[in-house]
Image 1 (tube, rainbow, N blue to C red):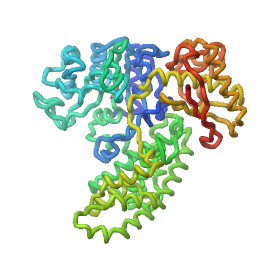
Image 2 (tube, rainbow, N blue to C red):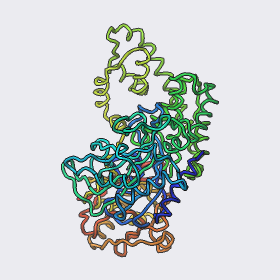
Image 3 (spheres, protein in one colour):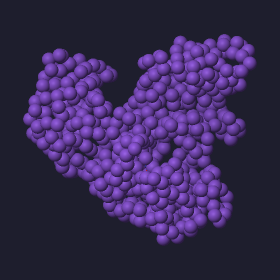
Image 4 (cartoon, rainbow, N blue to C red):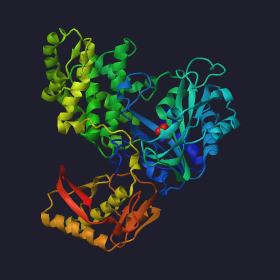
Length: 595
Ligand code: SER
């Protein structure tokens, strides 16, 4: 048996032996990226480097990264979908390309010194070619050179073998590696193209040599990069001969805790088993989100809304298992224990995880009680409708008046053989302006991919603002968050009181002075300790590599940062603070534009 800790270690060790620098994974909440709520892939924090920024640790990198993807939240409950997963990744930033990438993957998977998987149970897919790029015969040839027979190579279209983080950003053809999960050996001729059910994807090697600028424009990147991602939970399942991620060590202890609190024994009833899996997945994701360095709290917008949905759905499925009252604390404690070795921030934030979970659970249990009661009151009338359709107006009333989520109304309706007029509900929901934002669950639209000139200017302005705030308000000012679009910047920082109009004016003047001085913006790579002792500002609570990039703006500001930035402050235009307001206790928020 191999444990997740052992697999992470082996992966890092293997790539270290191939001269990769081990970098640390990042927060689940991306910095400076307004297009997405969570880190959705291992490559996400590396987007700027894939687009050409030099990485301080070099051109060969390896790490493990916690990820949250809620796009398939409705699939969770089946044996393989997860909302939170770990990705093992290795990157080449303009160093090696297809040949070495494929050779490394094959060696790691099949060599008895590493994972020792039976090569006869592996198959691959490569890009079939289309108007954007030719068929990837090169990758196929490299696979054959490793001994992969022709009939284990499937040539598939872009929908399978072209990986893009989103509608814009770095992208390219990929080659994916699959493991045969059925009994015995796969029959001759079998591959992902002929039998998609029994082949499970475990690793994806993307050859990122393009940047999608917009829907119509694909440009070649200055360098040919490799971005690979191996799903840790799935690989553990494969290595330990388990047919489902839920049967592995990553989940069994969580499931045992759910069994203990519910009294239900996993394996008895398919519908209840699905509820157990949903709870196990959601409590794991919620714990990871609450225990992240940049702790998010349940709320009605953005990442907080996703978190709220995860917790509430887990609670609802707990009720299906017959649990009364709050129960997520026990399985959450197991998650903290299981994952703190790899993610020490979880044990640092243990108290926070427990108290936030409990508070949200209790709040929701009250909501549920009221909502279900109202639904039951409506039910006799609803059942009289011969088409068995519940009006969207009623569903919205449950939502609006009682806070009863539409997902739960849909489930209750389905349980009673009904559907809900979703269009009508959506229409009512849209009109409900503030909450329409709450539904805007982000999908990864390209990471910091929106690296237009405009966002880069705002990024540089943020550094000037950060420094100016410290000059005017004092050294207690620390960055708490930053969110940049092409239209504005938003900057959160610690400060106990509202700023006076004079302070706001002074900060704005200082920033404009520095823009007027047209300071050069320069970058240097140095050890983190040296950066700190040279007086560079660094974000408290952020994880840094041993070697970091420091951006200096003339004699004015010095900050540890991944970039990118414009070359001179004179390019920024006029800086105007539009608003200074409270963000949360002890944290203020500034919204500013460049005119
Ligand atoms: N970016 C690719 C993925 O997420 C490989 O890391 O699958």
